[in-house]
Image (cartoon, rainbow, N blue to C red):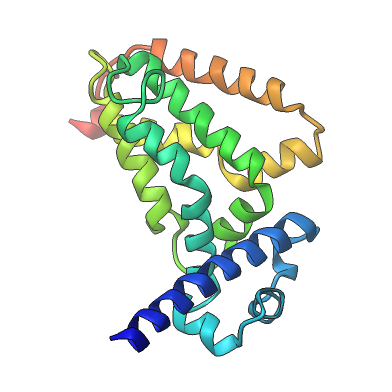
Length: 206
């Protein structure tokens, strides 16, 4: 039993060391692609085998680091007060949620970019994306008269994609507050717009 407890403590300590090392590396490196599993293992003082056993692969490490940084935001969304918490009116909560996504990605630009670019398959099947989309869709469904909540959630989240945030910050030199204001205006316009007008069927549709 003491050996098992010691092993568990070692695993917890190693996990914290790996996440701290990966955090520091992503903050320092110019490109997220420059951070390798070997770099993280060396910086954390653990073997590569330990790293792969704990996280599976690079994508698993990225997800774990992402979740670790996102935890305070997640707690605010689940149990916190307005404007992020569940008691917030939906028209106020939607822009607050998207602002939280944007701020998180601005604060974690390289990590967010690495996570969205990593792996294969559709990024829209990634667990972190599905979680944000599901939350937004559920809140949008509470707004009377707003249709197509699933598509609207996708469209709103597209404005916070990490590659777009990186482009606006790096290439267009858009300041953080300007980006937040423009996103807020965009969300307000989307929520204020009613359903699209019905189009008459053409002869070919009849």
